[in-house]
Length: 445
Image (cartoon, rainbow, N blue to C red; front, side, top):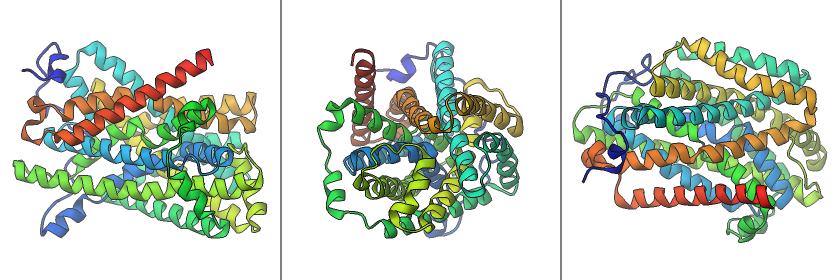
C-alpha cells in the first residue's frame, strides 16, 4: 500500500539533494572520533530549539497563568514539554533519515497549493514568534536602560547584524552564544526562586492535571497560550534544518547513531527548558498570586512588582537581565527558522540580512501600532495572543511531520517506531481538539 503522505502528493517527489537546508552551514560540523566525541559533536541544535521554548511570549503566558491561577497550570507546562520532546525527536529523525528538512519535505510530497498554504501558515507563525521577541527585547531594554518602548522596538531591527556576525564565525560559535545566554537565564531565575520561597505543596498539587483546565474557558485560553509558547511550530522546521549542520555518514548505522545522539541532545535541552518555564510560572505564583496580584500579564508590571514583593531590587535586575537574554537568544532561532521555511517551501534564497530585516519589519509594525494606540500596558495581551496564534498554527506543521516520520516509503527502515508515532498522533489529536474547543468558546461562549 502506498503511504498516505505519498498519496497526497499527486506527483513524484522532487529528487532529494537538489537543495540543501541552511546551505552555508550544511554539514560543516565534523562528527568523528570515539562515541563520546561523536555525541559531543551533536550537542547544540537541541539548545537552539530549546531557546524557542522560553521566549518572551512564553514569559507572558506563564506570568499570566501563575498570577491568575497559582501553580494550577504547572501540569500544562510539564505536559507541553513532554509533547515537545516527542515532536522534536520526530523532526530530527525525519531530517537525518532523508537529508531534507520538514519544509523541503512538504514541498516535495504535497501538491503545490497545499504546500503554499502550509508555507503561509508557517510564515505567520514565525511572524507571531518574532512579534513576541520584538516586544520582549524592547521591554528588556526599557527596564534595564530606561529606553522608551517604541525606541526599543526600532532598535531590535539591529539585532540581525549581531546574529549574522556570530554566524559568520561558524555554527558552533552560534550555538555557544545561545548556550551562554541560556546559562545566564537559568542563573537569573535560580536567584529569583531562592528569593521567592515557593510553596512546595502548591507546586506538587499543580503537577496534577485538573479538569478545570478544560472546563474553565479563561484557564483554557491561558493553557493554550502556554502550549503555543512551548510546542512552537517554527521549532519543528528549525530542528529539521539545524541538525543537518552535522556531517552524517551515508550508512544506515551512521544515521541510526545520529538519530540517537540528536534525540538525546534535544531531550536534554528541552528538559532544561522545562525547568526554566516551570520556574517562571512558579515565580509568578509565589510572588503575585499569593500576594493577591491576580492579573499580571504585562512584563513591565511583573518587573515593578517583583522587587517590592520579594523585598529586594536584586529580583528586578535579575528579571530584566533574563528577559533581555531571552529576547536576544530567540532572535537567533527566528532568523534560522525563517530561512529554513522560505528556502524549503518556495526555494527562494534571500541574503540573510534582507530575510531577517523583512521578518523583523513584519513584527515591528504591529508592535509599534499596539504601543501607540493601546499604550504600553497592552503589550502583555498581545504577547499572550501571539502564543495562542502559534497554538492554532501548530497542527499544520505537526500533522505533516507525523505523516512523514511514520512513512516507510519515505523513511525506509528508519521510520519512527509505532509507539512514538502513536504518541505523536495522540498529541496532535489533543492539540486540535483543544484548539477547536477554544474557537467554539470564543464564538459561542
